[in-house]
Amino acid sequence: MDETVAEFIKRTILKIPMTEMMTILKAWDFLPENQLQTVNFRQRKESLVQDLVLLCENKRASLRDAALLDIIYTQFHRHQKVWDVFQMSKEPGEDVDLFDMEQFKSSFEKILRRALKNVTVSFRDAEENAVWIRIAWGTQYRKPNQYKPVFVVYYSQTPYAFTSFCHLKSNTPLLSQALTVASNHHKIVKMDLRSRYLDSLKAIVFKQYNQKFETHNSTMPLQENLELDMHMDSRIIHENRIEKERVQRVTQETFGDYPQPRLEFAQYKLETKFKSDFHGGILAERKEPLRCLIKFSSPHLLEALKSLAPAGIADAPLSPLLTCIPNKGMNYFKIRDK
Image (tube, helix red, strand yellow):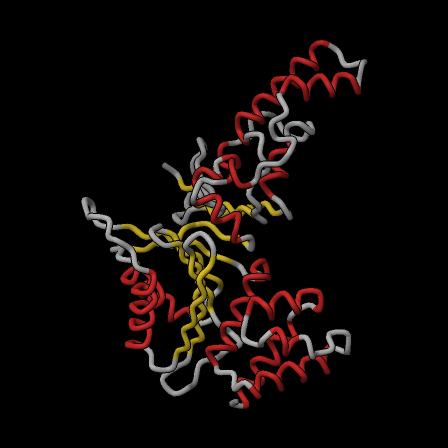
């Protein structure tokens, strides 16, 4: 086994938490289970890693095997990446082609290799007809950097692909071209949607958040919730009860009964020209628009927004600029004068 491959495997295994070690190694399916049973998983991690790397050396692990292990680790820890969403489209009236995953993989890799000699491309099939792609970029004179790969998750026969941060921005057009051509689409655009939570991004673009995120108490009738609240506070006056009922109804109509997809922020860029009834002054003569950036952030932004009105912090309904995030599939907004 090549020294660079051994070092790559070593670094990947070192990242794996001890509680997940056996699970990930079994998912990798490179080392036989009878060999894994001979390893002492209770020893110090450094010693454990040495034993596992030695087993990989004896089995002559390749770069492709090491890349597959890195994909599996990333699947378990996908929240450590920041994911962007790309949307593809076909020409108007263009027929829907029969999709072949193996043909997609072959075409995708050929496009990248035709344009760039030093590149490593690895694939792993996943649930729901998805494929995870790992790309390690090189240059004309340098071998691929295995420690700064970009990951792509593509769901077959859909116009959406999810990509992690790409360190080489110059390769983004090539990656977009490979996705578009291999999936038989005509055009690709980057959506104004980003998050660490890949499953939530998927739920938003596929409009699945009202199904995938339901909980055991999501079907509790609104009236039952109100009666419970009234029972807890018997001093509530009639006017407050009516207002609380209205806020609950508006919040339910806006956000639904189900937990929201998880996003960490929403960003709004405002561009507007200064307007005043008074003539003269520095701002009145300014030709460039005034620019302002507002960012809302929270560990769970949509759930936080959902709780504002019931908590009495904001009036109901909230601004459509805040409530439209899942429906529009955006958490980056640019607001300009009409």
